[in-house]
Image 1: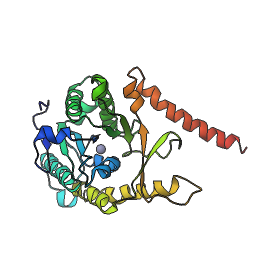
Image 2: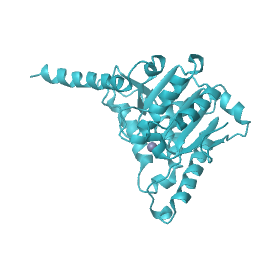
Image 3: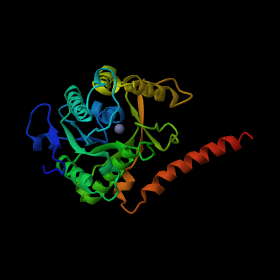
Image 4: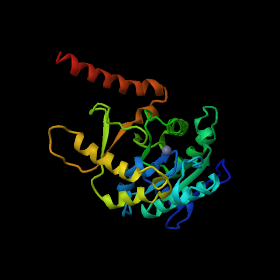
Amino acid sequence: MNFTMDGAEIFVPDGVPEAEALARTTHMAIGAHQDDLEIMAMDGILACFRRDDNWFTGVVVTNGAGSPRSGLYGQYTDEEMQLVRIKEQKKAAIVGEYAAQVLLGHPSSAVKDAANRDPITDLAQVIQAARPEVIYTHNLADKHTTHIGVAVKVIAALRSLPEGDRPQKLYGCEVWRDLDWMNDEDKVAFNLSDMEGVQMALIGVFDSQVSGGKRYDLATMGRRRAHATYHASHATDVATGMNFGMDLTPLVTDPSLEIVEYVESFINRFAEDVRERITSTL
Ligand SMILES: [Zn+2]
């Protein structure tokens, strides 16, 4: 595969040839940084874990530069830290039994630059080789601009492909902003009750981030547990772990749909729900 960045690579945990590894993909997650996939796309990872018929491919778009560091990693240069993060992502691919792990190695600035089409070209190539049924990426109400940049470039890549190469579903998922605020009928709920040990291992493997001062392991599992309990107020808990998604599929099937307007429609329905509940009790 001919990627735009020199350091880009495809890691295949079970060593099958690259093309074959990608072609077996059914579920794909595309995230900005190392560890984003494991935080936001556990639904896809678990759907493929220990299965011969479902395969998960992870795609990390940036090189992971500029991450905070402390403790054991305090003395690492930014270059050394980037290598640590690549190694951690490969460890996750092994633990999670991924079909393949793609590392595109773009600087964050390229992802945030609307005029830079390199990440779009790379993503279109990978998606076309893998033809996944489902793609998970960042949700469009995330508060990290690099995450938004990735989601926008994923949409552009999908719009550039022939219809037959597009996935049946595109979900925007939770990292730097929950989707708990969305109206229940608007949100997609992923049941993550199974294999908690695997889930914890897949966040814990990113030690440079967790030891680096952010307890993503506890926070991610805690968010899943909280969503499961607070999702439905009347019924008893049917799930012990949940993540929420924003269905972005209409943005792919209808390329004329404006991205901002589409996201605002969710926000407007949320505002309407808040307004109605208050006015009905005044
Ligand atoms: Zn991230």
